Amino acid sequence: MDITGYAFIAGGASGIGRACAIGLAKEGAAGIVIADLNLEAAKQVAAECKAEATMAEFRVDALYLDVTREDSLKIAIDHVLGMFGRIDYCVNCAGIGVQSTREISEANAAEFRRFLEVNVEGAFLLTRSVSAVMKRQELKPDGSNSSGRGQGRGVIVNLGSASSFVATPCMVQYTTAKHALIGLTKNAALDNAAHGIRVNCVCPSWVDTPMIQRAKDGGVDIDSLVKAAVPLGRIAKPEEILPVIVMADQQKPSENPDLLVSAGYISTGWPAPGLRRTVRHITGHNAEGKGIFLSTDCGDHHRMMGNQQALANIIYSTKETPVELNGDVDVKYAKENEPPLHIHNGSVVRMIDFAPNVMSPMHRAVSLDYGIVIEGEFKLILDSGEERIMRQGDVSVQRASAHKWHNISGNGTLPGRMMWVLLDCKPVIHNGEKLEEFLGDLQPYYEGR
Image (cartoon, rainbow, N blue to C red; front, side):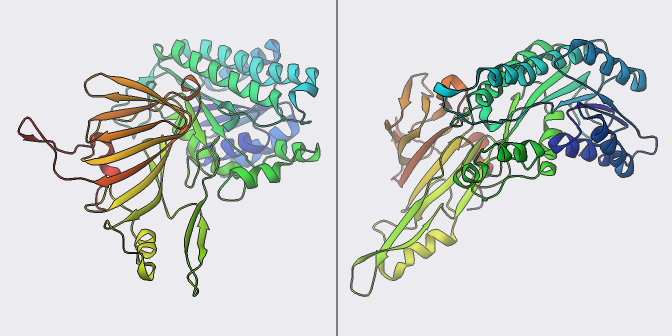
């Protein structure tokens, strides 16, 4: 990690904010101000930062902050500028958690308004205030170890949630606020880009924080939600979110302002947040020749693609067709071999989860590919410029044509899922020329297999 400069962390007294403050101190930040409603806890975090800091002249302080009050924000920001003269990183972890879960027909209006006040209006006031400060700052290099990144005036990172993209039952107040935060972040990123200010939103799913514990105490069945949604079977630790926040600090202005992160998406695993876990059942025969289930799992081979933009799951592959089923040799082959894009004389069944609004590069597979939309809505774009919209249950028959896919689920705000069955084909000749396969930026993900 390449962290230099001065950080202002709102909501830094516990949870992800605390982990971020301590982590930035370890990674070389020159100074940090931790601001929170809980001043005593913020002071404790400041002491931890000082103990862990690696910069010889490291400076740290803690102060009271209510992000819903403009006067409180002004006092806090003036204090930071008085200490450091500038703000290089602003991480907004201030927010409240769900205290009661109810269906929309019984939702508490007062709690809904409180969520908008703290998690949306508070984020707006903080982002607005820090943006104004950063616009007046001198340009500085965007990381000494990041060649070609040029110069910038600062970075703002808001803390969203996987619920910024999908709904969670009985949590309309939380889902609404987190969706709004994505809109705020995207607009701030657009407005600030010309000034050399980056604005991103990191969107974890379940993280082990005091906010989660308070939700449990209030009757929210977090354990069941985690069991159903997170392949690793546990919620993330606050310190596991730090590398993603740092990555958001170091992104180029042109890169996506919203970064999904959970125990099943940005690290490793399956599925993407908001998509149900696909379960694979493989059958066989017992000694009497009757059907039995050999295994039930989520697949053997998962691969992240792009900048945490897509996640591939190999459902099955065979090295030949017709397939040899005797002795379960096909099961052994599928388990031990992660396939290339397609297999000569064989077959591949591949499922891919797409992050919101992701578009693949133009590419061609010289194979016969059946593409099925499992969840969401996709645009299929051919190199001729022709395009079609595909919705859940729709099927494409790709006959070695050059194409790209665009996940437009929820107008580009939701993840989507497709499955492909790829079968080998004979060489394809067009106008006397053999069509060649090309994968573009996808090539590294299929090399060597």
